[in-house]
Image 1 (tube, rainbow, N blue to C red):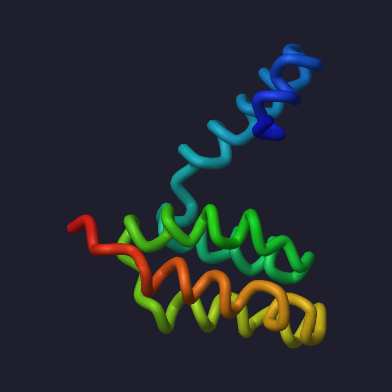
Image 2: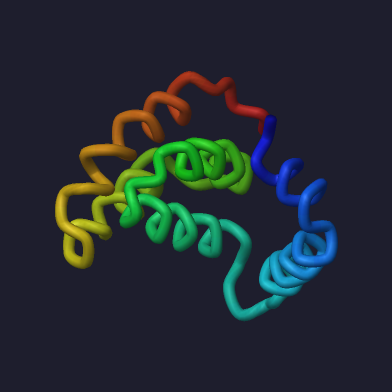
Length: 104
């Protein structure tokens, strides 16, 4: 079962509040959507969360990010979190990026 679906089933009020927070952050205008996704990818890579990184790789590519931008977002984690993000997330993210047909 998808963890977000489970969250919504088991704690609908908390899930609704969480989704409201995500909507608010997604619609704020201080950063463009591509930059927000690259930052999110960096944060999740620093935690070694390859599943989140690869899921958001689809999104950032559809927003026009280049392969080099994705790679650099993950490499930036080296200065904060050491090798963990690169070791767990770089290859899966680039594999997803490279395997997708451009939807533009």
